[in-house]
Image (spheres, rainbow, N blue to C red):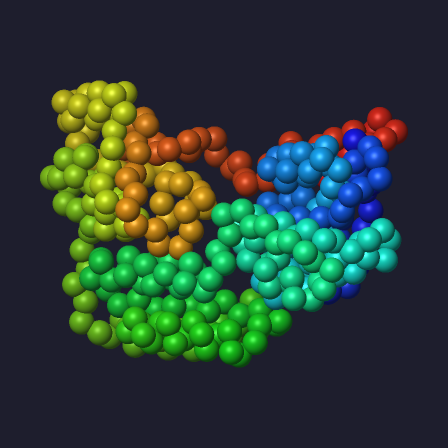
Length: 338
């Protein structure tokens, strides 16, 4: 199945890299795919979905958001609103070059963005989301959970609102309101653009919080067993109902305890895509159990680390590794090396 590669101009004036996966016959319909905000158009999941749809006669446009993959711009300057605008621009380009998308597909926050963009793509007849936060509560629940995770250590939380030039004051106010509801201070930060003076409000909020009486304490005492330490993090920080252990993990924990390593703290290795161990669970999910597959000890560094779910421990491997962008073009030349 052929793939056309091209660029189109995004909302910020940057050239965005795109791929249009075409069926071998005349397309039955066109679809627009929005990947997660930390992935790229060539992420394995995006390519597999596009390839499968093309095999069914549906052409799929996928592109790299600003600052990701082969697109121009800085990822740090992209916002939810700008990504939504880029999706509308992608639909506009498809409308002019081929045909407007009748199907909109989004993964993770890309799903939330495609829902927001749908109202500006009148030809859309179907919207499909994959593990996407579709309601504000999916995000606000996690936000509130993180504020409580600070409080559980006996100190006053301060929320730093990292402001972007394209933000609206109303967006900042929503965050302030949630923080106030939780009894936490909040400050808008513009230090990236304005230097030290852009962090004055944050510094004042931190200074005020530091003046309050506090009762800082660790989540568990050194004397607790490794299982109790893991359970403390799982239930008090992640919101799990409990912990399950594989036979291998049980055997390893017993070995470490007998060897005298039970005094060490634990560092839990799990997905970064959810507060749970399941990357598809968004917000602050409940009713789940943390599955410990394996337990390793870094005795020299001074900690024990349980490995949960399908987590791998290769360092530095992002959601969209460079290898997923390397390919051959129609002339047999290697692309995606830079």
